[in-house]
Amino acid sequence: MDKISKEKRSRNMAAIKAKNTQPELLLRSYLHRQGYRYSLHNKSLPGKPDIFMRKHSVVIFVHGCFWHQHLGCEDAGIPKSNKRFWLLKLKSNVERDKKNIKELKKMGYKVFVVWECEINRKFKNSLEKRIRSFLK
Ligand SMILES: [Zn+2]
Image (cartoon, rainbow, N blue to C red; front, side, top):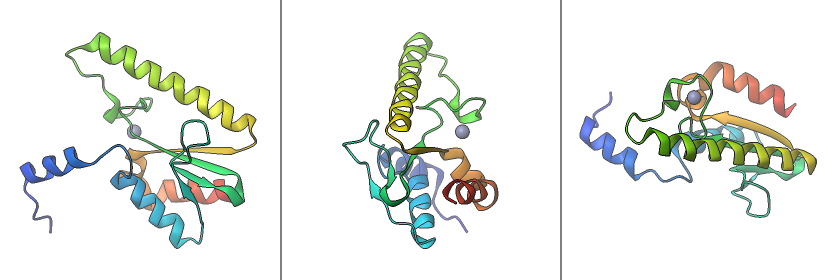
């Protein structure tokens, strides 16, 4: 049973920082259980990938659906106030992501993008399958 009140939960949500988000931790513990070893937020790689598996030449980004504009996702809606500001800001995030991914691929890495909504809502079935087939 979920005993946390709504107010408390929204305070908790606000306290979650950009790094080490809950979905990211979920994914990390999953990978760890599967026996994968990785380093985190590698600063020497474009975009500081959340997860870097040197042995497999794999980088994984865990993207927040809003900040990275997950296409067609209900969590990626643009706020109604300051719309112009958000459109520009989010567009530049998306362009930066594209550039980083392109560079990483050029460097020979396989790039896997995981969306937070996938971890939150579909982790047990479709995402897990997607990860397993990617890492094969
Ligand atoms: Zn999403």
